[in-house]
Length: 166
Image 1: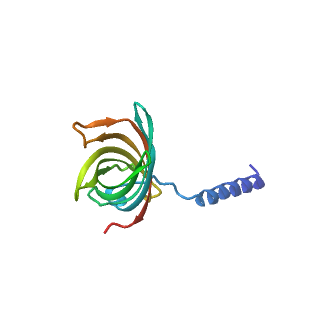
Image 2: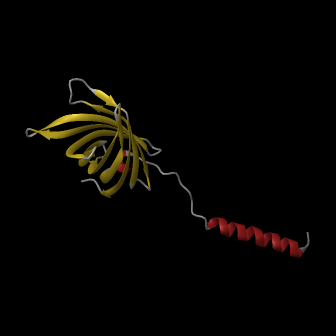
Image 3: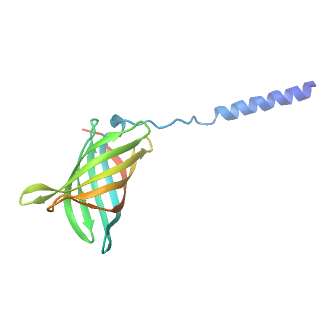
C-alpha cells in the first residue's frame, strides 16, 4: 500500500469514527411503578358488542397513579349517547418493558352513595419516557345486575401524563 492509499484509508476510518460518535445512543426505555406514577389525562373510545349490534362508547377523564400501583380518578362516559359521571379505581402492575395490566372498578353515584357498575381489565404500554400511555380493554363485566355479565368490547385508550404524583 502506498502512502496516498494509506492516508485515504486513515481519513476514511477517521471520518467513520466521527460520524458514528455523532449518532445518539439508543437505549431501551425502562419502566417501573415509580416512573409511571403521576397525574394523567385520557380519552377512550370504541364499541360494546351486543347481540343487537355495536354501541359506541367514549370517555374523557383523569386519574392519579401512585408508586404502589393504586389508581383513582373520575371520568365522564358516553354509552350510546347517554353520558354519566363515574369514579374509577384500579390496581396496576408495571413491567420493566413498559407493558402493564390494570384491574379496574367503576362506580356511579346513586342515592348519595357510589355503587359499583362494572369492572374491566386493561393492557397498557407506556412510552415517551413514561409520559404517554396506550391501552386496550381486555374484558368488561357489568356488576350492577342480578348476576355479573361479561360483554365483548373493542375499546382503546390514549393518555398523557399531566403532573407529578402528590
